[in-house]
Length: 136
Image 1 (cartoon, rainbow, N blue to C red):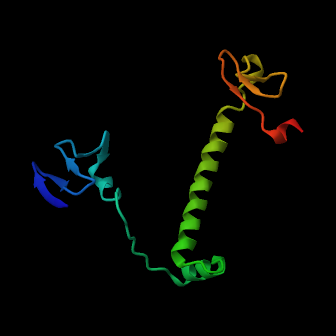
Image 2 (image 1 turned 180 degrees about the vertical axis):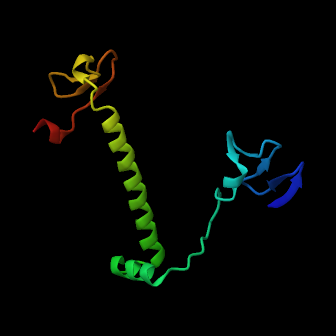
C-alpha cells in the first residue's frame, strides 16, 4: 500500500487483490462500497494479525475462561462473539422498547397452517412443508 498527500489529504493506494484507491473525497473504492480512508486500514481481504499486550487482569480473565485445548486466540475470538451478541441484544431491546405499543392483531397474518400442517405464505403459492417431527 502506498500513502501520499494530494491537495492536503492523505491518500492510500493498494494494488493487491483487494485493490483500493482513494479519491479526492477521502473515500476508498472497494467493489461497490465507499469506505472512509480512516477505516480502510481495518479492511483486509487476506490474513490479518492484531498485536495485543494483555495486562495482568487480561491474562487472569483469559486463563479463567480458557477451555481445554483452547489457544489464547480462541478465547479472544469467543469473547468477540460474546461482545457481538451483547451488542445485538442491546439493539433488539431498543427495538422492543421502540415497538412496545405496536398492535400486530390489527394486521393480516403473513402465513397460516394448511390442513396438513404445512406453512402457507398468505397471498402466494409458497408452502413450507412441515417437518416429520412437527406432525407428531
